Image (cartoon, rainbow, N blue to C red; front, side, top):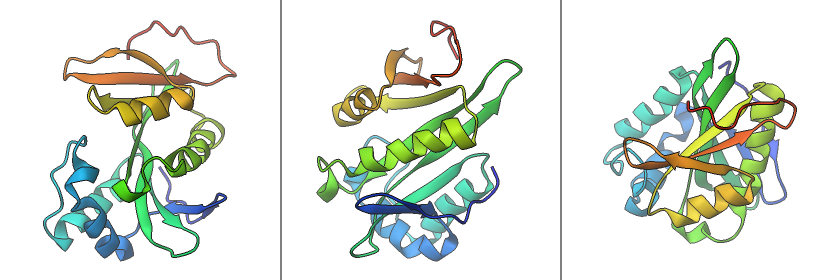
Length: 177
Protein backbone atom coordinates (compact mmCIF):
# COMPACT_ATOMS: atom_id res chain seq x y z
CA UNK A 1 0.00 0.00 0.00
CA UNK A 2 1.26 3.49 -0.79
CA UNK A 3 2.52 5.36 2.27
CA UNK A 4 0.06 7.94 3.52
CA UNK A 5 1.40 11.04 5.24
CA UNK A 6 -2.03 12.25 6.29
CA UNK A 7 -3.07 12.44 9.91
CA UNK A 8 -6.51 11.23 10.96
CA UNK A 9 -8.07 13.31 13.72
CA UNK A 10 -10.71 11.97 16.08
CA UNK A 11 -12.24 13.54 19.16
CA UNK A 12 -9.46 12.34 21.50
CA UNK A 13 -6.83 10.87 19.18
CA UNK A 14 -4.82 11.38 16.10
CA UNK A 15 -3.71 8.48 13.96
CA UNK A 16 -0.77 8.48 11.58
CA UNK A 17 1.32 5.82 9.91
CA UNK A 18 4.29 4.71 11.97
CA UNK A 19 7.80 5.65 10.84
CA UNK A 20 11.23 4.65 12.08
CA UNK A 21 11.21 7.90 14.09
CA UNK A 22 8.62 6.18 16.32
CA UNK A 23 10.95 3.30 17.20
CA UNK A 24 11.43 4.21 20.87
CA UNK A 25 7.68 4.69 21.47
CA UNK A 26 6.96 1.42 19.65
CA UNK A 27 9.62 -0.31 21.76
CA UNK A 28 8.04 0.94 24.99
CA UNK A 29 4.56 -0.05 23.80
CA UNK A 30 5.42 -3.55 22.56
CA UNK A 31 7.71 -4.36 25.49
CA UNK A 32 4.58 -4.58 27.66
CA UNK A 33 3.61 -8.26 27.89
CA UNK A 34 -0.05 -7.30 28.36
CA UNK A 35 -0.01 -5.58 24.94
CA UNK A 36 1.51 -8.61 23.17
CA UNK A 37 -0.34 -11.27 25.19
CA UNK A 38 -2.74 -12.21 22.38
CA UNK A 39 -0.47 -11.26 19.48
CA UNK A 40 1.83 -13.47 17.44
CA UNK A 41 4.92 -11.63 18.71
CA UNK A 42 6.94 -11.76 21.90
CA UNK A 43 7.40 -8.57 23.94
CA UNK A 44 10.04 -6.27 22.40
CA UNK A 45 13.46 -6.68 23.96
CA UNK A 46 15.35 -3.98 22.06
CA UNK A 47 15.04 -0.85 19.99
CA UNK A 48 16.22 -2.89 16.99
CA UNK A 49 13.19 -5.19 17.36
CA UNK A 50 10.90 -2.16 17.37
CA UNK A 51 12.57 -0.93 14.18
CA UNK A 52 11.98 -4.37 12.63
CA UNK A 53 8.27 -4.19 13.50
CA UNK A 54 7.95 -0.76 11.89
CA UNK A 55 9.99 -1.80 8.83
CA UNK A 56 7.80 -4.87 8.34
CA UNK A 57 4.69 -2.71 8.20
CA UNK A 58 6.32 -0.15 5.91
CA UNK A 59 7.30 -2.92 3.45
CA UNK A 60 4.06 -4.92 3.79
CA UNK A 61 1.08 -4.53 1.50
CA UNK A 62 -0.90 -2.95 4.32
CA UNK A 63 -0.41 -0.07 6.73
CA UNK A 64 0.03 0.44 10.47
CA UNK A 65 -1.09 3.57 12.24
CA UNK A 66 -0.04 4.75 15.66
CA UNK A 67 -2.79 5.98 17.99
CA UNK A 68 -1.64 9.12 19.80
CA UNK A 69 -3.45 11.12 22.46
CA UNK A 70 -4.20 14.71 21.42
CA UNK A 71 -3.21 16.16 24.78
CA UNK A 72 0.16 14.41 25.19
CA UNK A 73 1.18 13.03 21.77
CA UNK A 74 1.82 9.73 23.57
CA UNK A 75 1.64 6.51 21.53
CA UNK A 76 -1.05 4.41 23.22
CA UNK A 77 -1.65 1.75 20.58
CA UNK A 78 -1.53 0.79 16.94
CA UNK A 79 -4.00 -0.39 14.35
CA UNK A 80 -3.96 -1.09 10.67
CA UNK A 81 -4.26 -3.52 7.80
CA UNK A 82 -2.10 -6.38 6.64
CA UNK A 83 -2.56 -9.32 4.29
CA UNK A 84 -4.28 -7.07 1.72
CA UNK A 85 -5.46 -9.36 -1.08
CA UNK A 86 -7.03 -8.48 -4.40
CA UNK A 87 -8.65 -11.54 -5.89
CA UNK A 88 -10.65 -11.58 -9.13
CA UNK A 89 -14.00 -11.25 -7.36
CA UNK A 90 -13.14 -9.81 -3.96
CA UNK A 91 -10.73 -7.45 -2.20
CA UNK A 92 -10.00 -8.02 1.49
CA UNK A 93 -7.50 -7.25 4.23
CA UNK A 94 -7.04 -8.17 7.86
CA UNK A 95 -7.45 -5.50 10.53
CA UNK A 96 -5.15 -5.70 13.54
CA UNK A 97 -5.03 -3.57 16.67
CA UNK A 98 -3.45 -3.28 20.11
CA UNK A 99 -3.75 -0.84 22.99
CA UNK A 100 -1.78 -0.09 26.16
CA UNK A 101 -3.63 -1.60 29.15
CA UNK A 102 -4.09 1.70 30.99
CA UNK A 103 -6.37 2.81 28.13
CA UNK A 104 -8.54 -0.32 27.96
CA UNK A 105 -12.26 0.21 28.46
CA UNK A 106 -12.26 3.92 27.53
CA UNK A 107 -13.57 3.59 23.96
CA UNK A 108 -10.33 4.84 22.42
CA UNK A 109 -9.69 1.84 20.18
CA UNK A 110 -13.29 1.88 18.97
CA UNK A 111 -12.85 5.58 18.14
CA UNK A 112 -9.74 4.83 16.09
CA UNK A 113 -11.07 1.70 14.39
CA UNK A 114 -14.21 3.47 13.16
CA UNK A 115 -11.90 5.61 11.03
CA UNK A 116 -9.80 2.62 9.94
CA UNK A 117 -12.95 0.83 8.77
CA UNK A 118 -13.91 3.89 6.72
CA UNK A 119 -10.43 3.88 5.15
CA UNK A 120 -10.79 0.17 4.40
CA UNK A 121 -14.07 0.54 2.56
CA UNK A 122 -13.79 4.05 1.08
CA UNK A 123 -10.08 4.40 0.28
CA UNK A 124 -8.78 0.83 -0.06
CA UNK A 125 -12.07 -0.26 -1.69
CA UNK A 126 -12.23 -3.45 0.36
CA UNK A 127 -15.19 -5.78 0.06
CA UNK A 128 -14.39 -7.57 3.32
CA UNK A 129 -12.45 -6.56 6.41
CA UNK A 130 -11.28 -9.57 8.39
CA UNK A 131 -9.97 -9.82 11.94
CA UNK A 132 -8.83 -12.66 14.16
CA UNK A 133 -8.61 -12.88 17.93
CA UNK A 134 -7.46 -15.43 20.42
CA UNK A 135 -10.52 -17.27 21.75
CA UNK A 136 -9.63 -16.02 25.25
CA UNK A 137 -9.44 -12.35 24.17
CA UNK A 138 -13.03 -11.43 25.01
CA UNK A 139 -12.33 -7.67 25.05
CA UNK A 140 -11.32 -7.68 21.38
CA UNK A 141 -14.24 -9.93 20.49
CA UNK A 142 -16.71 -7.52 22.11
CA UNK A 143 -15.09 -4.56 20.35
CA UNK A 144 -15.31 -6.23 16.95
CA UNK A 145 -18.98 -7.07 17.52
CA UNK A 146 -19.72 -3.45 18.54
CA UNK A 147 -18.10 -2.35 15.27
CA UNK A 148 -20.42 -4.63 13.28
CA UNK A 149 -18.13 -7.62 12.70
CA UNK A 150 -19.62 -11.11 12.63
CA UNK A 151 -17.85 -14.13 14.11
CA UNK A 152 -17.44 -16.66 11.29
CA UNK A 153 -15.74 -19.52 13.11
CA UNK A 154 -12.53 -20.81 14.62
CA UNK A 155 -9.60 -21.24 12.23
CA UNK A 156 -7.28 -24.24 12.16
CA UNK A 157 -4.74 -22.32 14.26
CA UNK A 158 -7.32 -21.87 17.02
CA UNK A 159 -8.03 -18.18 16.36
CA UNK A 160 -11.58 -16.86 16.22
CA UNK A 161 -12.26 -15.32 12.81
CA UNK A 162 -14.43 -12.23 12.24
CA UNK A 163 -15.58 -10.47 9.08
CA UNK A 164 -17.18 -7.15 8.22
CA UNK A 165 -18.70 -6.85 4.76
CA UNK A 166 -19.00 -3.66 2.76
CA UNK A 167 -22.58 -2.44 2.73
CA UNK A 168 -22.40 -1.67 -1.02
CA UNK A 169 -21.69 -5.22 -2.22
CA UNK A 170 -23.82 -8.35 -2.20
CA UNK A 171 -21.30 -10.87 -0.91
CA UNK A 172 -21.99 -14.47 0.06
CA UNK A 173 -21.15 -14.33 3.77
CA UNK A 174 -20.90 -18.10 3.98
CA UNK A 175 -17.85 -18.31 1.72
CA UNK A 176 -14.66 -19.25 3.56
CA UNK A 177 -11.55 -17.16 2.96
